[in-house]
View (cartoon, rainbow, N blue to C red):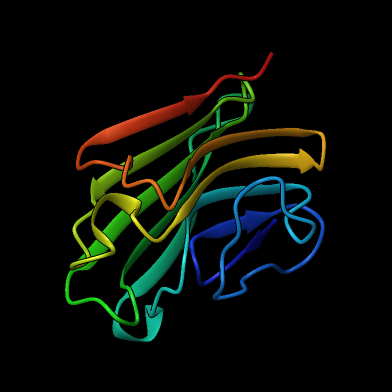
Length: 138
């Protein structure tokens, strides 16, 4: 698992381009896009940890960073559940400034490949404070 500085997780290769695209995108196969946008973790942090005991562990990533052109500290978290295969994405603080608030400049979703993907938001402003999105494993 590769944790990208710009709100991405990827299972195939490092992925962290600052310029996001709507899904499907040719650069995002095998990816979880919690808040794909031009984040500045140098002015914040990115953390990852594994919690719990097998077979019920969780892998958690938190991006707490501003957007490069914003003024607020975004707080987005992705939680991968070992026992169910489900993925939770939590939008704890989605206020990053004008044009950034609630994901107005971000892409959110998951993509297996160009034909298997879920687009939860692309430049849509749908990632509101306190929102939790669960991608349930079939």
